[in-house]
Image 1 (cartoon, one colour):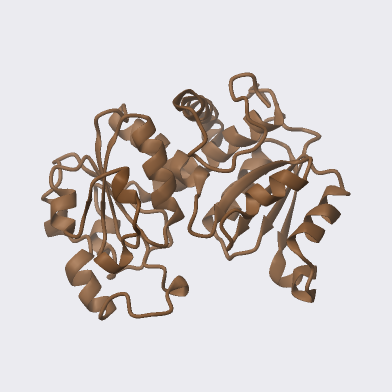
Image 2 (cartoon, helix red, strand yellow; image 1 turned 90 degrees about the vertical axis):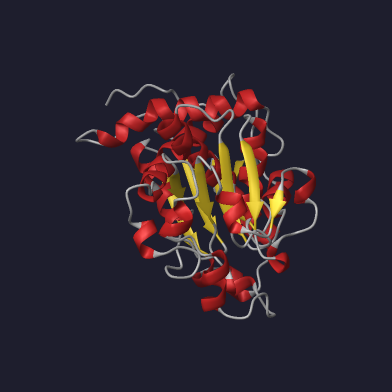
Length: 312
């Protein structure tokens, strides 16, 4: 645990002070250059052990943590619960206690239940990192989004950021609302009435019109339609959703002329975002992926007390 980051765990953005967020972003920016080296390896976390425990499918987040751990020379173990004792009925607490008996320094966990990482933090000695819990928070995604915004725009304060799509099921939206407002950005949320949760309107402006949301925006963050979390009819059809809420080139032109387009992935092309926008000149979606590794490196270093020495 670094003196500049006085937390043992990273469970969400909501509990963090703005200075703590800035510390993570500054550390990530400093570590970012390691990823451009011919030999991407530094000894910052040599001798530390990290367990990646993912109860939900993940490509970007899990791979990003694994790469970050390898670059920092940590020893890591990734557990797919689909092939673990979880399938035999083992509880989360029993899984955690058995992992703890192996003395890992950190457990990175994604879980479908909101609050699962907080439960782990109350029962484990290891540092816990929330890699996404239900529809609650996804702190490292918000951090990588903020790092990307800061790199592309030079600041966060005063930026208008439109977050559009399936806000109801989005832990990304919640973490970004907390982070961006803490650092002075102006956030507006846009979703169909059926996909806008109650309560968030008390924190930031909301609208059911994507055209209103993106008007003059410095950044547009599109959210994936999470069909796997939907059991009812939230909208008539995917085609109708794209017509009403899809980000097209025409809608991009309503934004600021230097707008950047973001998406946490995976994308539903032709649903929440048109391919020509996702692959267009304003898209920073692949920059977000690269920055995800840098942010997760920063979180690992700050929580595990590793050195920020980047010499091989």
